[in-house]
Image 1 (cartoon, rainbow, N blue to C red):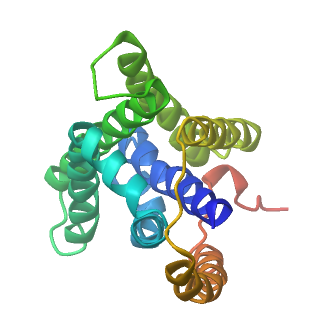
Image 2: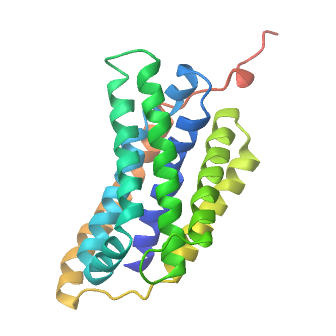
Image 3: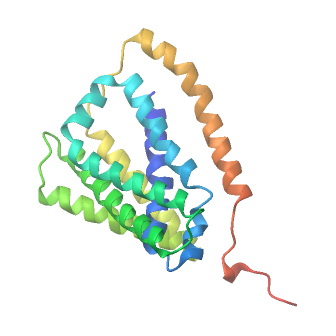
Length: 222
């Protein structure tokens, strides 16, 4: 179960982080539209990870969301702004909602960075140099992540992806995990084992159907 939880959290930070990086680094509405078909699917990873954390590791869920509620509030608040702005842009064209998405993306990145730093640091939440460096570091990392996606810099995108995964796993390694009782896990496990492949398949199909091309990749006339 812990491996599945790690997959879900890294999936969120990779794909949801892409939403935030693109939201910050997009130069215009057209570039921001590059992730518009995917943003809800990307954020679903957070819902799935939170559900599994609550069901399979309730003690850790209470500890993490209790001790580090301040950065989590900021992160979730920013995520809500991003999701709402992306959704409403369909009905209200203009730059105002793009600005809301940009602000939300910055807040979410800073909040999640502070959360990861605080988890690695341990104990009650304290705004230490480590936590601040982690917060700003994740913001910079997701900016590079989004920029690499927008510019089709695949090697850089691979590097930022591996760094995001490493950061999430490093923070997770600092936690002492306590699974729920066997009966609860036995109920949750079949649901998770069915839901995870479906989630991955739907995400893959969505990315394939709504994939976009960078102008530099357009076929040149012969």
